[in-house]
Length: 146
Length: 146
DNA sequence: GTGATAATTAGAACTATTCCAAGAAAAGGG
DNA sequence: CCCTTTTCTTGGAATAGTTCTAATTATCAC
Image (cartoon, chains in turn blue, orange, cyan, purple):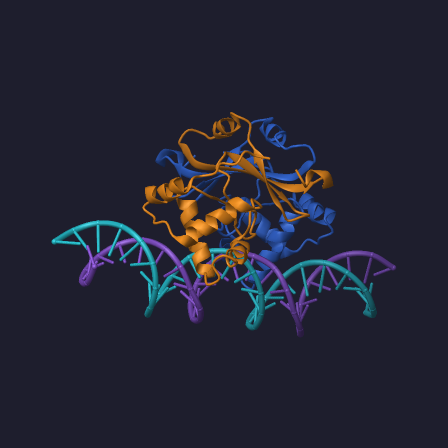
């Protein structure tokens, strides 16, 4: 299991403030939900989970909050082909593996230096602000629980 | 510029047949359009271009044909975030760079061994059928014409 | 407190894509 | 060759995920 980084509530508010965003109960709860179960939920899945705590929240707010968290770099948006966007609070550099059989998504830690090595393949004049490495495939039954 | 691989018409038909698919004028023309201008067009852009040659073709057919070409491994579908899918006839292993300013997509050749090195970061039990490496960022003005 | 700014909400709108049913084209068997 | 079967194309309707809009509510700075 990858190491988890847990922000103190103050750091959470600060991260938002650094991007000129306000802290709100909705944003706090949505972030805590992402931390609680790191299974790369979709916006719909987050919506279903957050309603237990904030029954009157709207789906639009879930999208807004997730976008806010992505914009202040607390959360990563993960896309596989044209499937719904998934959300990931893992701030370490990592790749994603999408299990086509189970429909599940797993973080894959990157060894030190690999990202730099990948960035180095860019020709002069290419300046990458983000690098994504993603796998599709299957996991062996006993690997699924790792 | 990456090397281009041009299939003879017979090989084209054979590639389809190998996947149990028929050759049709629509599929041929769409494939030739992808080869002619390798700028990673969307389905809509392919539709606009193919109408010059087959004025009565439908958008549904464009999607069907592109899917057929992807299924028999003549074409790769390329996705960036939630933008429309783009299509690429480059069969060499390569990464993609998406220029956020220009909206353009460029192939990045992979040095030998890199893909294997990336695959090697997968823990035991993870079997990847495809690996995607994609960059987002900007290209310097003089690099845009490379 | 008060005015300005930002966030939330419900629902409508949008976009890329897929589905559907009907007709056209091609392949294979006699 | 005709006939049958399968595959492909087509236009339009449907769908899914996401974004937009306008009104309301909350928060911030003074």
